[in-house]
Length: 193
Image (tube, rainbow, N blue to C red; front, side, top):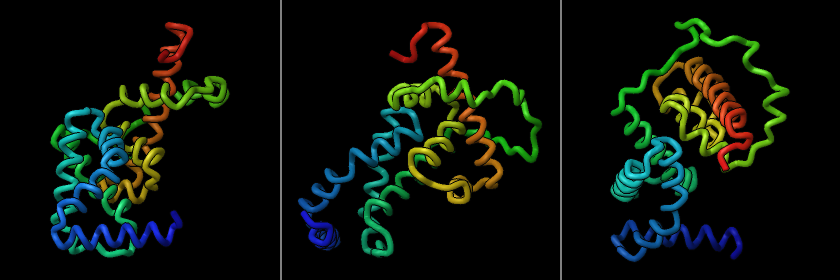
């Protein structure tokens, strides 16, 4: 199918949803549910919560479909809703965000060695497993930045924190991720097999 045809089909599907066509709602849900669930799961790190957030996100999207403007794709708009709902879910856990401007560095610069990082040559699945072990704040910023493609300014806006905070969280998340992977390798000689 050509991209233009795909967009016409998408627009038709959205129009049908706006007119209350339940089959169109189902088709739209089926088209986006898996990708949006993965987005939610990467942020909340809990399958049950991710399913709840996904359902709430679709409900919100369907309720507000009339306000959807075609300045962005429907998928992009829905993803933003999913990310915001996931962040709301995390806020219920009372996450503490660490701002570099208000804390001292609690790590040694020598603990981080780029050569060691390059030597590890990990598979994506191993890294994802390690990401799930990160604290909520670290995992959220790392996921939004690396996996969802947001920049630090956008992440700061989503989380309602300073941009320096997102940069700190990202830097520390990366360091913690490397430590987790290195520790697993040292203990087992293999990484998350």
